[in-house]
Image 1 (cartoon, helix red, strand yellow):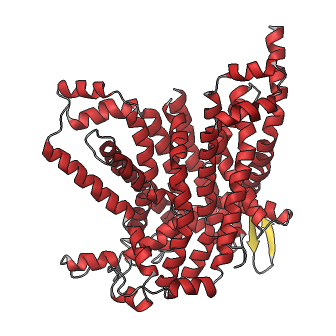
Image 2: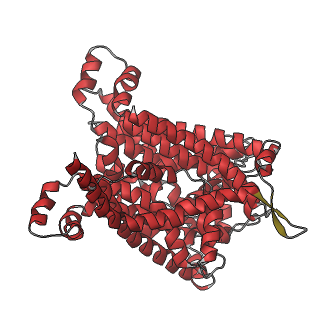
Length: 292
Length: 275
C-alpha cells in the first residue's frame, strides 16, 4: 500500500512539468477570461454618466422581459434543432452511400465531400449570399423552371432564418459524414446481411442495428454539432445581419450587437451566460451517456 | 449480397448529385472573379464571356489584401506551432501519468468547447488589454492556441495511448529521461497525430472570424475573414467581382493544405470516437 501511494505521488510530481504549459494557457486564456466575462453581466454602462455601475442580477432579469431576446432565443432553438437534425439525416444518407461496396470512385467522392469543411465560414456565407441574391443564380434557375416570382430568400422575414439554416446545413455535412463513415466502416457486414435474410426492412436495419452499434460516434456528432451550431455567429452575420427586422436574429448575434454596437456589454454577457447554461446541459447529457 | 442494377445506377446518381451540391457553389466564386461587375449582374449563371483580370488587379493594388493575407499566414503558422508545442506534453501526461485532477482536467477540456464566444471575447478583451495585446498578432495567436489546444491534447493522448509503454521503459533503463523518451521515442511514432493537430489548428486559425473581428481594429491587422466581411460592407451594394477574387484566393491555401492533411485529421477525430 505504502509503495503504491508513493508511486502515485511520484507520478504526480513528474506529470506537473508536462502539464505546466497547458495549465498556463488554460488558466490565463480560458478560465480567467471565462470568469471575467461572466462577471461583466453584473455591471451596466450608463452612457450619460459615462460610468460602469454594479447592478447585480438586473441584466438577467431584463432578459425575460425583452421581446427581442425571446425572439432570438426561439430563433436559436429552431436554428440549432433543424440544422443539427437535417445535417444528421442528409449526412447519414450520404455516408451510407459512400460506404456502399457497389459505389465506384469511392475515394474521389469522399475527397470531394470534404470541400465545404475547409472553407472559411465567411467565404461560405458570402458565396451563399450571392446564390440566394434576388436575381442571383438560384432565382434565375427557379425562374427558368417556370416560377414567375421566386422567393426573396434573404429579405423575406418568413424565409431569412431558413436561408441561413440551409447554408449551415451545407457547411456541416462533411464533418458529420466523415464521422459517420468512420463509424460505419467498423460495422461487421455479416450482421447486416443476417438482418436482411431475417427479413428486416431497410429502416429497421438502420435504426435497430446500425445506429446502436455506432452510438458513440453519433453521440459525439450530436454534442459537438449542437454546441457549434448554437454558438455559430458568422453565417447569420454575413447573410442577413439578423434581418430583415430581426427576423433571423440568433443569440450570438444579439449578444454581439449589445456588447459592441449598443455599449451594453453587461447585457451581452447575460445572454452569453444563458447560452452557456443551455450548452452545459448538452455536455452533461453527453458525459452521462458516455459513462453509462 | 447483391444489389439490383437499377439500385446501383440510382446510388451513383444520388452520390453525384450530392457531390454537385457540395462542390458547385465554389464555381460561382471562380466565374465571378473573372467577370466584370455588369456581367455578374446581367448573367449570374454563365461562364465568363471574356476573361478579365480587373478584379484581381483591384484587390492586389487597391486594397490591403496582401497585408491581410500575410497576417493570416503568420497567425496560422504560429498557431499551428504553438498548439503542437503546448498540446504534446499535456497529452503525454494524460496518457502516461496518473495525477489528481486528471478527470476534472479532461472534463474541462470538453467543457471549453461550449463556452459562448460572447463571454470569452469580453473576458479576453480585458486580458489582452491588460497585456497590451489588443489589435496585435501575438494576441490573436494566443487566443487561437487556447481554442485548438483542448482538441490537440485529447487527440494526442489517443495517439500516445496506442504506443506501447514497453518501448519507453527499455529506453529508460538505458538512462533516458521522460522528456527525452517523449521526444526521441514517442513523437517520431506519432507524426500522424501531430499532422492531425496541425491541420485542425490551421483550419481554426485561418478561418476564425468572430474573435478576429472584435480584437483586430484596423486594416493593417485584419486577417482574411475580417477583410472579406469589411470588403462586403454592411448593407448597400456589394461588389461581387473583387470580393469573389479575394474570397477565392483566401480559400486556396487552406483548401490545398486541408486536402493534404485531412487523412490524418479524419483518423485522429474518429480514432477516439470509435474505440
